[in-house]
Amino acid sequence: MDTLKEKTAKGLFWGAMNSGTMQVLNLVFGIFLARMLSPHDYGVVGVLTIFTLIAGNLQSSGFTQGLTNMKQPTANDYNSVFWFNIITGAICYVVLYFSAPLIALFFHTPELTRLSRFVFLGFLISAFGITRNAIMFKRIMARERTITGMTALLASGTVGLLLAFHGYAYWSLAWQTVTFSLVQNVCRYYFTKRYWRPSLTIDFTPVKSMFPFSVKILITSIINTVNNNILTFIFGNLFPMKDVGNFSQASKWNTMASTTISGTIEQVAQPVLAQINDDPERERRVFRKMLRFTAFLAFPALFGMALVAREFILVTISEKWIDSVPLLQILCIGGAFLTFYTLYQHLVIASGRSGIYMWCNIGQIVIQISLILLFHGFGIQTMVIVYTVFTILWLVVWQINAKRLIGVTFADVFADTVPFMLSAAVVMATTYFLTASVESPCVLLPLRIVVAAVLYFVVMKVAKVKILEECIGFIKKKGR
Image 1 (tube, rainbow, N blue to C red):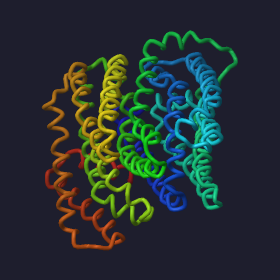
Image 2 (cartoon, rainbow, N blue to C red; image 1 turned 90 degrees about the horizontal axis):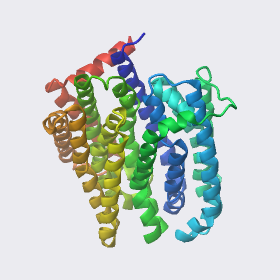
Image 3 (cartoon, rainbow, N blue to C red; image 1 turned 120 degrees about the vertical axis):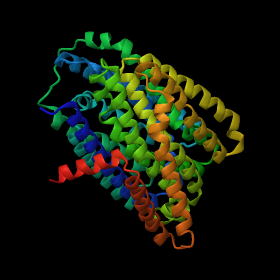
């Protein structure tokens, strides 16, 4: 039987594999799709994202986290959540189906009526797999989640490419979304069928008992969804779909980079912290180690993405997306700090303090919407800058609550993160000046990646950073 430390290490390893391979596949499919489709196509599908995600939040209702926090969930617990998800998902789909004409009217895009009704099928299909995902999350089945994600992405990406190649425009993105949900559910069933099967005996007592905790997770998930997609939603009403598409493209690449890091941490953070929340000193040590691991990966990855943004866009998806470059650079700076939200949020949830989780996010979204309304007249770029700066500053609020829960101080956080941030910033600045004379984007892109990676590795090696040594040791062990 693996120890908690071994489970954590394996979870992080497979989490990194999952996030890394998923983003590589997203990168490949994203490049080909962006070359075949227009900013307008991405804008049309992008404005629907917020509706799909909110409906997904409603149907899951925070019960994944509720089941994870339970020491020994029963078959009846899973069955109760399963039927609740399906009923809620069906109600949400019916409401959105009849709301489709209003959505099209709001965004001044008539074709959204038919398109939205089809895209929304994705979250209805997903309702059948939420409980199975909770089982995989609870049991830290990181390897199986990696295989599930890769299979779903390969299948859906292939469908999207084939349809785009045959001229289906934004419908190719819609089919990609629905296919992903369908294949993902099939894989989740395959990996969890031996642990639990649904029954027709429906008892909502477990749902009622989890509701006080889970409803706060639900409210917060909706707030986070609005928060993460509010710019696209507002842009869809204020600006042409081409501008929305440019922002959507920049946001996609930034999210892809930051999710590679946060997705790795997310695989293990709540399950591990929930198991040791009765030992605050141990929990503080584990949290700080995760904090260092996040900083070690996030700052070079996201600062590096900002460094090569122009060359990346030109080489991969062509000059027609050049207007997305400054937006991508700004978002990547904020994205480096955004990865820490995942860790703080899972700490609070694992402590059973869903109220803190909810109110921190409510405060954030209220202030962000106020700032957006205040600055929207200054243009897209200014809005993105203000949004990013505030997102970074709001981490202070999460840190205050972390200190109350497990005693981790601001000094601890600075000691764990600032050295990595400064090292990454110096490495990227050095790389920029060393390669500034190179003009060809095709040469400059790989050159800057290699130079920055080598410099960062050397700095970490010279500084004898323990996280690097542990990563190398673990990889060697897995290799053997």
